[in-house]
Image (cartoon, rainbow, N blue to C red; front, side):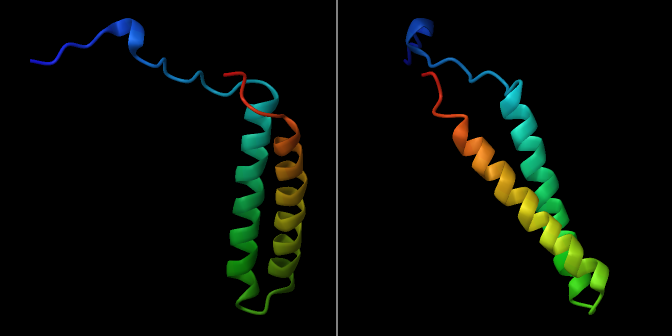
Length: 74
């Protein structure tokens, strides 16, 4: 018979808020731009190349920013 003690259970992490939520959203946007740009660039589309470059720049900037947010408080 298993006994679960509620006080020993680890609490669920809180959803991201503030700067962390914006950084995660920007990473998602940058990754989407990158993938769409690559898909369009395969067909020799200049627009796709620019989307790829924009996606890389957004990812670079937001990953740098996300890394600067620091470690979790736990």
